[in-house]
Length: 132
Length: 132
Length: 132
Length: 132
Image (cartoon, rainbow over the protein chains, first blue to last red):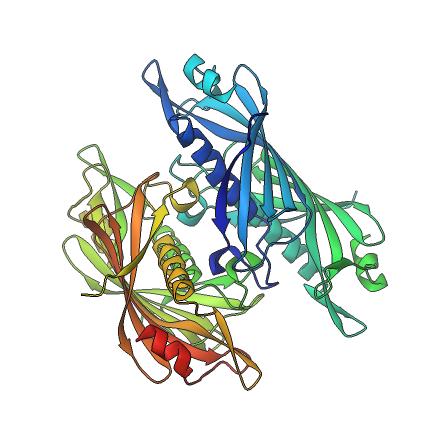
């Protein structure tokens, strides 16, 4: 079984809010850091070029299940796993854990777009191979 | 037909990222501002007391459909509509628009919890009446 | 006496941290919103063109005096006043108040730069006239 | 010569803005992460107790010199050095570098306060020894 990619994330004051918990939007920042490091681990660039035009992944859909709260100074683990790969999009499942406890599950659909035209474009073969 | 509650939100540099668009997590900030103003418009406090213990809504689930991007300096409208009201939770649908164009749709499930015990608790009747 | 330009800013959960106060970096966001609205009030664009190249103000220096804390749900006033205008830079003094109480004073030095070359450039005359 | 404490910080999309640079307030987040890790390295807690009341450092003054910009995906180093230690406050100098290039210098004055009363209080001796 292929191990799931993950990174550690420390919770700082910037991530928390007046309830003493991690602010709900900030789990999406943690998730994006893990996706970035996932691409880096496979030597895939954040941006690509197609026929001379800049291309990159943008988030098209997100489903987030907040199961439990993270607190200041917690050391979290954020995973990143490709669960579906289509022509111009990819679905990634991410879990944010504190030790063995799952705090947050995110299912993120990313579309590969031409940035200037804001239109979906085919994920190039080398990037597709890395994600598969 | 009851009009849907909404607030205006201006996009500043803090909301954007290096792609030139609003960063995907920041739409959740805009949505939370609208939910806060929605409660304020109905004179509902952000936090309540039950048997002397602090209670507040926390986000339990979020589903976000990113249809189109917002840019620096855009003036957006963020709506807030109760679509389901249960004993200790409420489902709110929110649309983020630029003029008539829907950029982002969020369906947010909030649970009313006792903050110290991190346990769901009954939405009090006066708050329930306001939300209905 | 010329009145000082100011905008209202409401404190939301996103602005606070686990100490229950506004997070110290977020006062800089409030200040930048006021500077943006100040430029808008004088019909000055966020970005300009000089010889076909993009130009904008960037922060070169900031001095921030944190006198008192803002809390969740506070309604603040953020002012913006030009205190010095040079060839390619401008010094702006900003106060963040809760009613009559000054919470935070910022002195911000902005430099007008050519974005692509990251080099200071002369503030154009029309913009200079607006700021004076 | 005592080596200066520092941590690595990677720049993610969340840190950048529409100019393609790190947003000016976010350098303060990086600096606060380094201060937190500095305390951790010396086994000093983020919060203390004095006579049963919560105490913590809050920022009282910040002076920030923005010399050069950081970009998406840059790997930065953020240092943390005590330059002055007083009864209830400490002055910390921090440099944010990309390799050998200094991008940002921050001089931060922190005051040790009783959180509930929002009043300065004496830095306890064990914490003072660690900082010295």
